[in-house]
Image 1 (cartoon, helix red, strand yellow):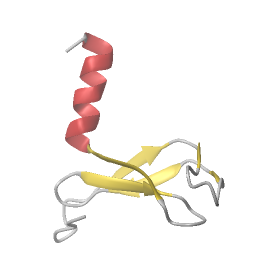
Image 2 (cartoon, helix red, strand yellow):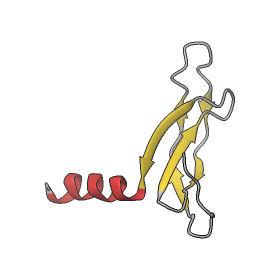
Image 3 (cartoon, one colour):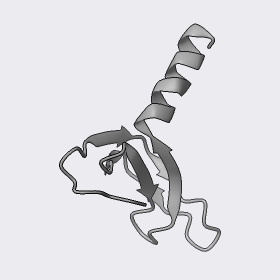
Image 4 (cartoon, helix red, strand yellow):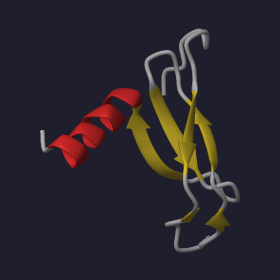
Length: 71
């Protein structure tokens, strides 16, 4: 992931999740991920550091609009 300077990074909340890694299965607590300057972020398992989820602020907005307005 390209982090840039960090000046424009923000916190993005995420909910609880169970790690998808077969060898882990850790129950992660809700928390916050930091975006890079471009709005991209990753949510990692707090135990094994496997990436659980990748997204961006732009994707989140598009998903929200699709779920709430149908486009």
